[in-house]
Length: 225
Image 1 (cartoon, helix red, strand yellow):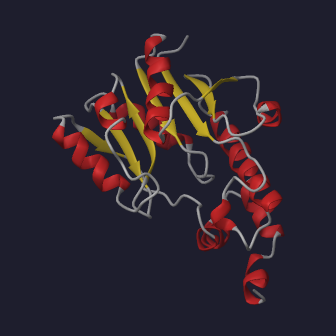
Image 2 (cartoon, one colour):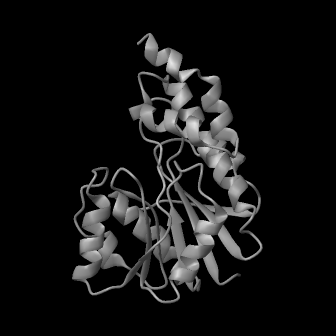
């Protein structure tokens, strides 16, 4: 067992239930497929971490996970999420690995195909001198959280998940409980069709998400919507 653990936190890609804010420009099947592309990009990125970090996939219970688990490389272990709220599910996933003896645990969402392995490694460094590490998204949320000790008081505090105040409210909660927090790279997660188009225009890694999204001819679809 290595000292540090990284969790990819994801829903099971289900047509009509996954990335629904991309509809009606994408079909339910296309939304599920682009979520799979997000994950394939994260799995590929994780190749650069596996020598020094144990990697896990924590998946939701809102669909049959078999296809998702079949996509998952052998070097990534997996376990189902437990809890009711998003914060509770993230907290339980982090605490599970802390209880197994990992010194530091970082968790990210799955809809960030342009994340770089150096961001994860920098997050572990930030935890050398902080209780928590966070990475904000451009829409007011965050895509990464990490710690070296349980942070139940932060993650289980009342929170309007999915709103543009999540990052600000989380920072306020961290301050309220007298914890220190360091920040790492801000990125844009992909929730809306505008996010996806910006990603296509700016991305340079030509990964799975880029290639799939490019094939959808999104600007033409919007033009005729």
